[in-house]
Image 1: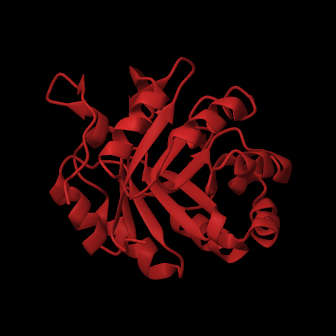
Image 2: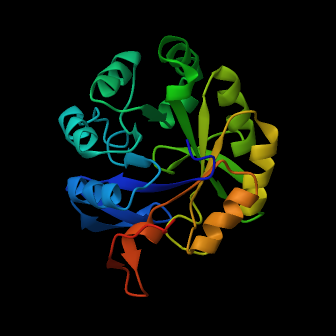
Amino acid sequence: MNPRRVIPCLLLGEEGLVKTVRFKSPKYVGDPLNAVRIFNEKEADELILLDITATVRSKPPRFELIREVSGECFMPLAYGGGIRSLADMEKIFKCGVEKVVLNTIALEKPELVREAARRFGSQSIVVCVDYRRNFWNRSNARTRHGSRRVNMSELEAVRQLAAEGAGEIILQSVDRDGTRTGYDLERIREVSDSVGVPVVALGGAGSAEDLDRALKSGASAAAAGSLFVLHGKHRAVLISYPGR
């Protein structure tokens, strides 16, 4: 596996793929199957698919769609959204997905991370920790698509969930989501230095140079959404991926 992974992160809304800015103002960007086919052609290292509506609306994963996406995907696929139990995870793995991504449920029921790691192997359990800073530049982990504040910092959350058995951490800055202003390199460095599992940087990538800076700051992989699906100041939909 490429040790310097660059990963497109696709967000699934009610009607198809969307892209957000600071977790708000979703913009429709197309059909997930078409996007996957394009990333196949561009030989992306991996792909992350996150359903941003499922947990907020108390809906289960869309297993049939997950199966269709997995069937089209020629690269390792990670899926997150609406997962509430080991049974949900098992169904997702049976759809052909290599990794599940836990977010809200991981922070609400951290013991589920431990149970999942024991049953499926830690290498297949990813936890996405969303966080945002307040007026005083202090930050806290967030759940339910950024709407609920958790009474711990993102660093404390990452340490706890890595100790529970998460094999990989996606560290996502809510404040930088969709802004293309660059990653939160200070936080990436701090978190990467504090845990013994791979950290995937997400939120803020605006250029290939930003991807490189995240990797040089200690991230094992750099993930991005807007950089790979939107183009220009008018945010026109255009799927791209950095060349080799």
